[in-house]
Length: 281
Ligand code: C2E
Ligand code: MG
Ligand code: MG
Ligand code: MG
Image (tube, rainbow, N blue to C red; front, side, top):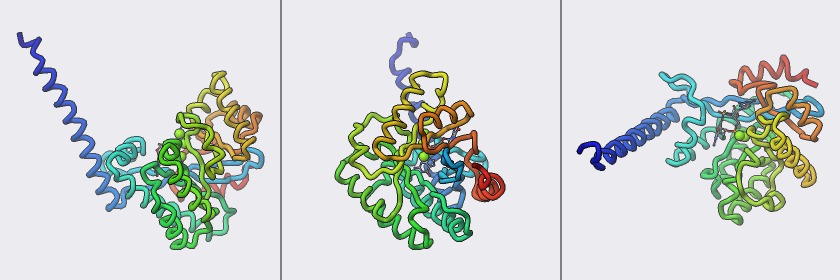
């Protein structure tokens, strides 16, 4: 009978696929529009040095201010932008905007800190160093104000090509950090081959501190390895004083997370910096 008709399930299945595809196309054209229409905004989340309590960085995190949907988090459009290639245009806008903001802070006379920009594997092309150099020049931004956060997936491509790009970026005076560290499966040997300044312990490990013994062991191991390799190490997603105490005891250099602040619009970041964070430590 009808129930056993295989064509029917096939029809349902492809209908679902079409729905998913339509949804993706809707987001993609919406994002194209957003780029041209000024709907993307950067929020900034502070990074602090544990020993001194000093503000040492600000991670730029993109948000889409959708006229109907409100604030759309990057998790809902960055992965799609990566598969469609639109990430290149999004990334160009993010770098431009982050450098413009950093140069405003540089000229305002507040103590220097690094503004970190997330860079997807697909943006890590031979044209990136020149684009970074041009953007630094355009805003007369000291390169020590800029940091690029890359992930292990970037390192898993052609090693010689990736190394050349990284060398050109660090030669400018811009630093590189390895984001979501510990979640990829690439070889540890890259840590000494690539010019990386900072390891960022992924939030999934920070979350388990101090209750989960494995997460504590992984975080502790990453920290001691970083120290032996003369890399700086930061824990992301720090939400509690217990986590901070563990990380401090283990020798972690820096922390970032809701314990201090969520990502904030530039004006709110600046206000908190002047009123609160200048006094931390
Ligand atoms: P990420 O680079 O690992 O950024 C950290 C994420 O953790 C951010 O989420 C941040 O808001 C969140 N976070 C920070 N502290 C805490 C905490 O204490 N608790 C919890 N629960 N979460 C915390 P967000 O802003 O939603 O960004 C998600 C991801 O989207 C980023 O992960 C990054 O991979 C990507 N992304 C964001 N902005 C950009 C961008 O401009 N370009 C690219 N290529 N990717 C971006
Ligand atoms: Mg990041
Ligand atoms: Mg991260
Ligand atoms: Mg992460």
